[in-house]
Image (cartoon, rainbow, N blue to C red; front, side, top):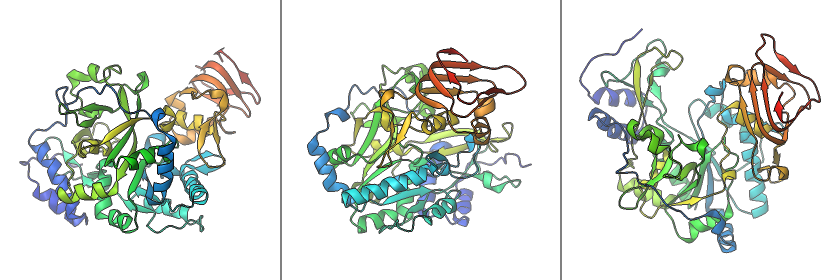
Length: 471
């Protein structure tokens, strides 16, 4: 097993390693920019002096019918761009998370494709769907489009994000790991979207085809649909960049939040960028009241101008992530992964804005409990292929907490819900502790907690109704 080599920090071996892997000069230059910061002792921390509270931002509820009209006019010049690089490894997946079945036998990606086709048909607009894939999601993703022969557009359906070397923590040298050379590399965070748009030629292709605006969001967030009122607001004021934010709750204390520099420029601060001594203040949802939904709107001409002016290096704030070189072996030597967040580009564009949107536009799937809620009858897939909460929910999704010992991995969850999700339409909260198997047509109402400590699985019978209290 390789141990950390000891040598003084030197970028030359990184440049050689990246060039040998075929990475473009712009990517090497970006990585050099961040490596120099690391070698000079940068932690990536953004202190309270640089990140001050934002007291208010424009509200979605204040958008008008005129905004919607202008959005409809701008639709033919707008692209939907989805981040699709994740494998869902934390959920036990080996393939793209976007290929997980969510509703009516359709995957995230199937639903996205149908949304776009419906929008094109009803609005008579081009509206291309473009995915930022990783090397690990590219082939499986493109195979899905083979089933949609009617899906055509004037720009490619995907481009690839880059990879960058891991850095030994002790020596700041490039990681070498002969047992598994793939572990010498890591994704550079979704802030890579900007150089990847440039080096792939996708940005030029979009501009040449007459596209001016891009709506960017995560492929696993089905709440993030193209909203005409937001598009119209974005186009009306010719904004260079717009971040959708939502009001923070206790559940959002540790996520990235909106802040501002002393000069008033909006910025994003992620938890990894908060000094440890300021953690309590970072998590104060009254002080920092807005979190980043990772739904962004880009003015493509403004982005191209910034990339040209900055020679392909936007200079987003560094995120220094420390991890074991082999994530499956926590005791393996420590490395740094140098990353950036795409939302941090809000600090790059003078005149960038944030818009406070309804929580319904933020429905990410990070765990199987999130997936179970979407699969249930608490959500309805409409004729336009948007996923909305059932009317009985009154805008509030049920809270589901499943025991990670038995439900963390997708195969394990499916084994315990062999007939699909229980009815959660009238459920406020479901907590499951222990190994519990759900029968067919189980109904959960109110707040239900199931605690099972036995060695053998607890089987819930077909048609069982669980109401308030312990199950």
